[in-house]
Image 1 (cartoon, rainbow, N blue to C red):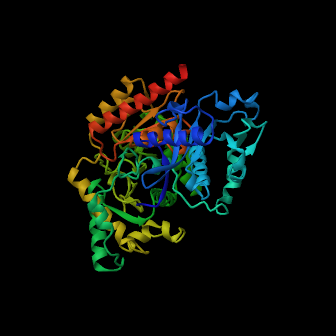
Image 2 (cartoon, rainbow, N blue to C red; image 1 turned 180 degrees about the vertical axis):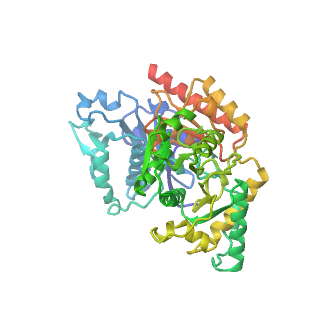
Image 3 (spheres, one colour; image 1 turned 90 degrees about the horizontal axis):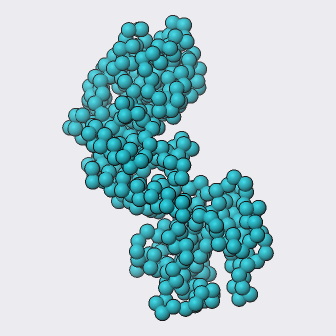
Amino acid sequence: MDQTTTFKLATTPDEFEQIHRLNYLTFVEEIPQHAPTADGRLVDKFHAENTYGIAVRGGRVIGMIAARRRRPFSLDSKIDNLDAVIPSGSRPVEMRLLAVHPAYRPGPVPVQILHFMARYCLELGDDSAVISGAVRRLPLYRALGFQPFGPRVGTPEAPYQPMILTLEDYARASGLRRALNDAPIDASPASVAQPYGEAVNFLPGPVPISSAVKSAFNRPAISHRTPTFLTQLATLRRRLAGFVKLPDCQILVGSGSLANDVVAAQIGGLGKAGVVLSTGEFGERLADHARRAGLDFHWARLPWGAVPSKADFEEALAQVSNPGWLWIVHHETSTGVLHDLEMVKGLCRDQGLKLCLDCISSIGAIPLDLSGVHLATATSGKAFASYPGLAIVFHQERPVSRQDLPRYLDLGLWAESDGTPFTHSSNLLAALDVAFAEVERLAGGRCANPELASWFRAELRHSGFTLVAPESHASSIIVTVQLPSHLRAVDVGSALEQRGFIPSHRSGYLSSRNWIQFSFMGSPTKDQLSAVLAQLCDLASLDEQAATA
């Protein structure tokens, strides 16, 4: 029998049945808080509102704890003016029903399961937690940062001490885990609820990776100086460049952010001022790249989700005397807005501007013609469906090495060295080679199903949800949903994960705006989209009913 203890959220009927029986064992047979029943089950009165963290060994639930966010808490009926203890403006949660089978109480399981639930709640944005801690276990709670308050509650036979945990106290106390023999656990809600490989992945990265790509990555590593590697690199560069109708590209070991830093360095060599136009998170990151590179530029900062017109671009360019370049994100991943590439290309052509594009979330996803574009960036992850780790910079002109640049950011040095001035990764290159072959086979791109994307957006709107991108410029790559105020993106996203769907909701720029995203980079089917839509509607309905109850 498997002797590994796993900490997770309860999701299956069998797990909930075991919770009811452990609840009975602890709070009826051991601690006489409830009357006995014939079936040996105790269903908590707040069961429908509880989120249960459980410890599982060999399929058996050996420990549990419940978290509940709905007021009034059970402590509200036992403590006068509980709000005086809870920090003003915080998002409190109540933890209850800590129970561990007697055989596992002397070991680390009680601490581990408390630690697991504290991490889980704090990750969801709950910044304080209250609990009625068994007096005999006060050292355990204190070790995690819980602070006692108010008089003890309960009965003489089962006394409890009200306690509170704040994010600040938890961070300060979490270093005590080793002293308490708290073995490391992976308690992130995404990994706990459902491994990516088993769930339906709606993330813009990482996306599902095929077995062929995995096999290519797992080949024995070879030197980046061998003829085999150099030939594969040269061939892949030629295929990638031809795919977007540009002469050449360089493939660097790094992320998309590195690729944009390289572009910023190249823009600096133009000797002219320019414009960065942003309509979301990644456009604003371009402005940060430009600022850190010391570029002379005007930042046209439009509202998130805006669709810039030709007049908007012209007005921005008019703020610069004799502008030489324009740098924008083609597909704004944060909002799902796809900018009008042909209009922008025509504008730059008419005004003699060097157009630079961040195409990180559009290349490989939809058909792209970058002919005439000065510089463009991509990455090996995202819609190419390979492993992240390779930064791709496409260029219209052959770059010249410049001594005033850091060596790694010198695109000309890469070009003059046949793409290998530094150590490269044969494993990442082989994986991208195989993944890109699939994109080439699809021709239109992995997300080139505008009808399916349009159907999904229409169904979302019909169900009462608000989408960030206007339909006129909504991409078939990302759908960003503005959730209503009675729903929290972190709650909805985590609940979907528990139900087998992995949306994007954890990035700060999403959670701060109460947005949740669904990416098509994993090529979801209509059945999968229908299923996640049904779950989303169910969660919204449940929460709305609870809010009005």
